[in-house]
Image (cartoon, rainbow, N blue to C red; front, side, top):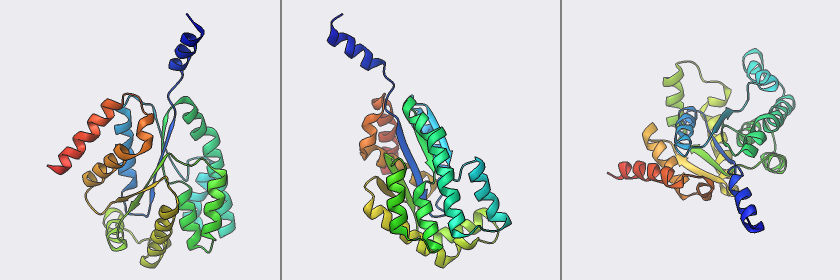
Length: 237
């Protein structure tokens, strides 16, 4: 075997490049449902999927979740907790999975930190700069968007309880505006209109994946492409 053939053989044995996908956006947009569907779609490509969320189930993530019940931390304490939770998440789960060649799908990421901390008086522009400088930027972020009145109706119907402080009309409007501003300056972000049915949203996700550059990173591309094309054809029928 020549040296060139040896190099080619070694290259073919390398794991495929990892792909980092994020679904983010305002409450009531149906993120959790679509994260599961996206994971199923990626598995059709023969890829291993790490499905995760933020806040995580780690020590800092649990502290954040508990504070929503026992009493909110100060903005500074909360911001620190989110940063520590994300640092641990990236170090122990996201980065190792990407190095293995897995597809990482995360429900909420630093975009939510920027949007929600902005509501508590944080400087969103500075926060976004900090996040982009410190944490891995996703290959593709799907920003789930829908009109605030629709989001409020879904929150009320799905949970049947009183909306929290972030789910009041004024708060959701400001949070949505922050997400829209980030979408306008972050090239990795693709906005998905989530005002339709869950199946409508899945088809829009399929279309975004089909058109994105990250699609070229996947092996078995014809299998995935065939599935996506079938979804799009069904939507057009």
